[in-house]
Image (cartoon, rainbow, N blue to C red; front, side):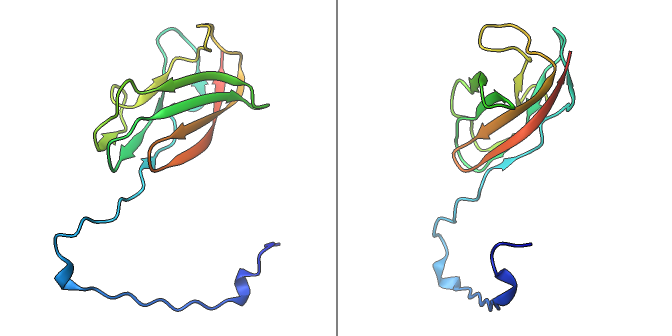
Length: 130
């Protein structure tokens, strides 16, 4: 069951719009991190797995790959901060070649991928097939 008693609470919400507040900078929305693709990821010299993101403001994109037991396999980061926008297709999205920090292909198995931007973070699974 649910360990928190959320079923026992009633919430009422009210929202007000003040049209005199024009010109005020809006709230920074969260960045969007999509699902890595292709997954499962078949290792080869020509294959890459991609990590799509949509950025709401300038940000570095960090990708850390771990074994399922938590051992760090590879750390990557964009060379510069990326401008706000869509980085969701091959050629724009950050990618991984399936190699560890030493430049060797990783073994087949399940890996954890931790993606971070200025406004979002998510951990996803990657199935790697040799």
